Length: 130
Image 1 (cartoon, rainbow, N blue to C red):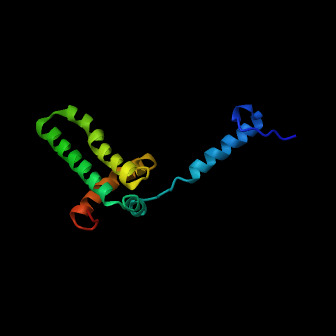
Image 2 (cartoon, rainbow, N blue to C red):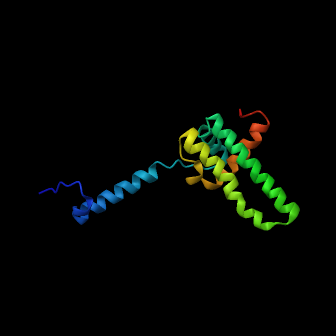
């Protein structure tokens, strides 16, 4: 006889196992896979369609470059601790409040970091609109 309940804590162990496995597989299937950065970059740009989000990324990346330059020029290595705050704070504000999506950093951290700098260059060169 089947058990019907809304409280997952009261389900039989075998039903909990099936439910858990099904949920985990669904989450894994939603992550897009890319073999190269060239495959990833169009996806990255599609996640940055909002101009305010792109501008905030530009500000954050500019700050990262400035902090790196100051670190090297002054030998103040503790400034490196400010890099994540400078880079991610502007980008995440852009995603959460303007683009209204999750930053690609959560699923593709290295490609996203490279994407930030490539989009920065492309914005300077006029290939991507401000």
